Length: 325
Image 1: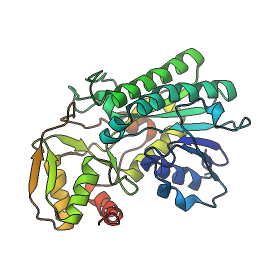
Image 2: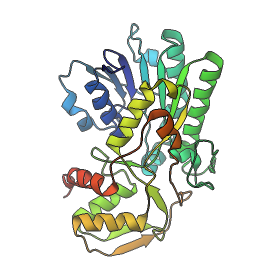
Image 3: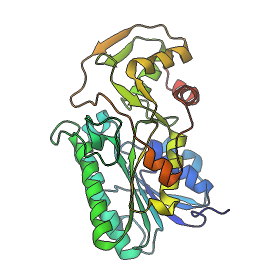
């Protein structure tokens, strides 16, 4: 059976990012013609270097927070848009707070307005985040939960901007009948992660491979749910192609919940590291528990992750080895 993406024009913002580059590969393999947009604030050229010479892929270096008419060809009419452009790790978006809130909010508005003008029937998939739940009072988190977010804290440039992006999606769906789909991404890991990302998996992986003392923030009892990037991208592909996903907001993540201490134990087992642990204070507004309820993903998309943390890390650690000094 042919893919719905076969021969389709697909626009991906953040195409050189960790998740965006994997999504680009997947949609190209399904026969799409992909136009990527990235300004390389956090995207990495090496993530898409293997696509040089691929006639089905083109890249425009541009800021996706600007109106697309400033960077897209006049005749370009996408059938699918995946809006992933944004820094995603706390150190990265806190270093670029204005760029972050603009691309998540105004970037979303500008892209939807472009579709309204050029192709109102197009499918728009917005990459939101589990950060919209903040430090959740509900556990696990369902899509119906409104969240517990500090609107003016150090993480708000990302958390609240993603929430604003969801608002903009909802307005365009209700006012103009557009096909808008929202993915709330939970912690994702795998090859092509920025080694300086600052989140749990890159930090602990590099410390384990270097065999240096581990850094843990807080007492290590806070939890995360880790989704291997191949699983997540399969969910994104389904989110764009499954008709029943129209105008849905769906969590994509692995419901397997690990404390930071349990995460460290997995990495120690895989690398043989016996180094000690140093503890530091938790950053402000850092969530203490995070686990997706993926009932909607199972029912609507027929999707659930298949890669365990142990197996995913076996595929990820060789990637991080290249960054050892």
